[in-house]
Length: 245
Image 1 (tube, rainbow, N blue to C red):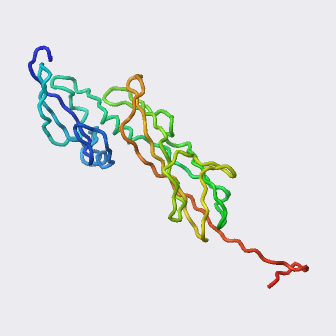
Image 2: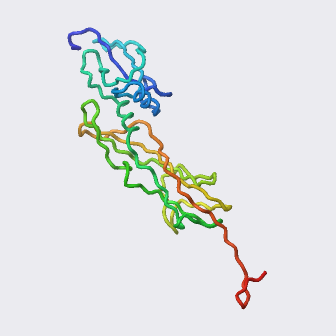
């Protein structure tokens, strides 16, 4: 088609989130872009995106991008005028990445049993549940007739100790007593809910091709775990084993 034309339209879809532009179509992602299409345009692919087009001619000259408005039917947007509607782009990949059923990070605490002591080092370890897609696992789906594989990658973790203190973001997965890298000492008696947040990056592959980096990242909050922080008292005992004082 291009060989027969002196000029044509080129199209681009930009996810409608703060920070995204025609020069950086996937610098940010907001769940509201997905939710809008699911709630207001049943049957659409989404995410809610702003559509732009510009004129390109056979001499390689290009015009300014023109704003054509917002759409949820992103699968119907061609790459260029006259091209098929199959136009899988990086913003479609980013949107699918954010729809991934990520494994929620679990916090394992030692001492075990949901109890620890004031002034005693408490150890934390990041673990993954059986449910969801954890780092290095592959999630396969289909987008506009193409096989897309998404592989989440672990970027870092932030440990929330439940008492207003946190540690991170760090790359450490923590560990058990006595060598675990993530430790915290509670200063007063309390019932707290420590938890872990994980930032995922990712890679994608289309139709069995090479793995490519997905722009941006997503942070997933894991559930809290109830932990009783207790105090202990030393008591002197006489020869008859009765408490002294």
